[in-house]
Amino acid sequence: GDSFYDYLLKQGLQRPRSKARLRRQYREVIDTAVARSSGWVSKGRRFVGESQRARSDPQHKMEHLACFLPGMLALGHVTGVATEGPQGGSSNAHLTAAEEIMRVCMEMYTSTTTGLSAEAYETAPGKPVRPQRTFKYSLLRPETVESAFILWRVTKNNKY
Image 1 (tube, rainbow, N blue to C red):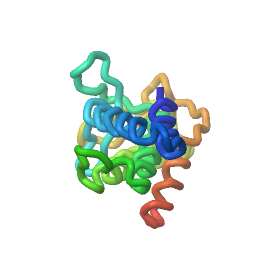
Image 2 (image 1 turned 60 degrees about the horizontal axis):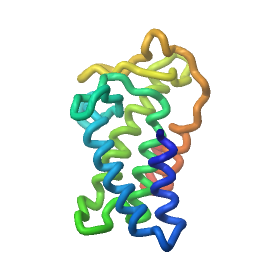
Image 3 (image 1 turned 180 degrees about the vertical axis):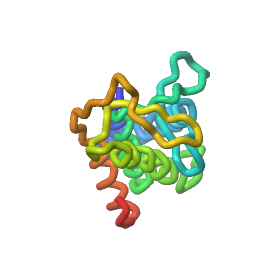
Image 4 (image 1 turned 30 degrees about the vertical axis):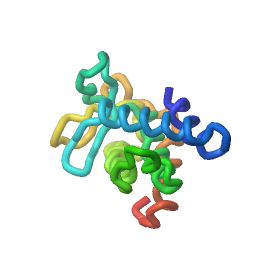
């Protein structure tokens, strides 16, 4: 599923004839996904979880795969796709969300003794993230590193 979101943005950037339609679809899908699938661990720390049913709150579980989202949001911001069209939106809304989600992604690595991220984390409000018992293994996924690189390029902030 995550590739779908990524390809909407990238195809909207690469295909001139379908550009307006794909970019509009990207904004609609991403705005809805961030609104319905994210929640707060604490101020400035946002998680992305699953919703079992439409209009239900997301579960307080974040999988490592969700860490592709900060990079994609930052890319949408820097290319202007996030703010085009009649709805417009805050010019920094996607970048702010990217940084808030990235804080939790980075915490996934700093919360383990090995420095490797587990596959899924519990994200209880006001508490540090912690690996879920049945997901305490690492598949060495690249999503967080890719997002950190894109955020560094977009923000020039050395914390990434």
